Length: 510
Image 1: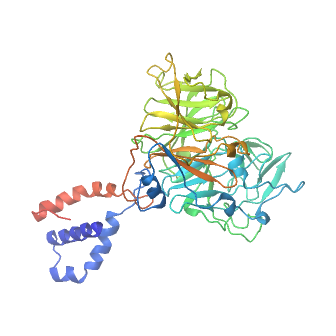
Image 2 (image 1 turned 180 degrees about the vertical axis):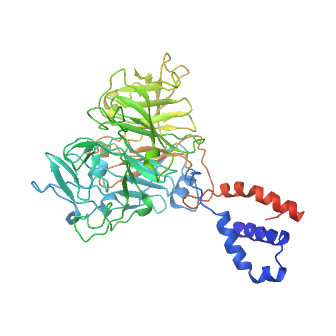
Image 3 (image 1 turned 120 degrees about the horizontal axis):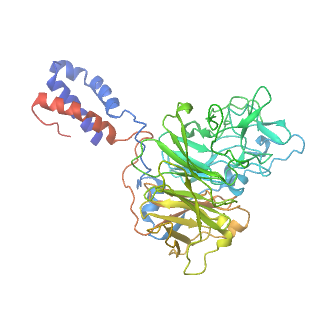
């Protein structure tokens, strides 16, 4: 009602300063309103905003009512209730192996927070665990799980390497995603760099007509095209050839620069055990992602979702002190530090040391005064950056969370990890991790706007857990339409408002 009052006042003002006759204006008032409303609501895709706490939404209501430093389980349905029917899962033609959608959560996997819709997006499987490339999401608006696409049929290329039957440019083969999945809010796309692909465990590659192959990706997935009854690629590419395709996937296909040379994932392992982290810097006008393979740290910038050639990769750091094994990564934009875990140690790149060059990493073990942090299981922890309190939070799937802050001098001062013991009786159960989930890894995310952390455990139930930190500082407002910043059109209209007001000699009141 407030918006319509403003629009009507705006139309009245136009009529008062133009040559429109009063009778004609009144007669055609509905046409003026129909013109003015789209002008004021024009979608501005460059102004992506975090998902806010809207008390009228399901997740907003629960988060608002939670006490600080407490957990809440959010899902009202289970993950297995929306799995792809067994008859529509592809199988290896020689062994008839299929695996289970359980592996999308269970097998060395990650998730991403769709800040446009308030959803968690899951894609995984891969290697020796699952043949499918189906996508799933948990919806904050309903608190329910849903399938977002059916899997593609697969075909053998050579040796042990498979691809989706509609080709590498239509849909990726399933893969362990480790900590390699994120959501790009300005582009409005889920992105994955993959990891260990089905069935050969190698990085994603594309086979050319001349028989040669090369690394490929990353892949974008468009959540606006999600459909539980469609395959993610083209028409007819499902196990049932009558299944329609949603055209949900896009292979950006730009990892390797023209003429060859260094690129993300160019070490033998590609993005196996890799980590990625979105920058939560609110001043950015493009999507910026930090990508760490086993050898280097890269910055990936997406300025135009419609132009893969405009994507930019910059090598920022080198792994000088060797690391190996799986882990999680996060970027602290306030201190300009990328932090990752691997094989019982922490590794960081301080990008302020050489902003125009390639920074070497540095290994460390933080001080744990409690003596209870399990460094032997560091590779199983999830980790993300909390920009409100300027710290990293780690989670292993149980009721505890651990805080790690950047010291004043990261190179010389001790880093300290501290235990946080949440209150309340309802908490995650770490036995779910022991029962088969191969590490939390990328399934622990900070959620801007809501100012909470979300984690998932139990690869059958798909339990979604919210942790509300002490000093909760959310963005509380009604949720805008996807891709629309309510205030941005107002700013752009201010010059016109000023001109109209000067002509009318009075103020517009709404």
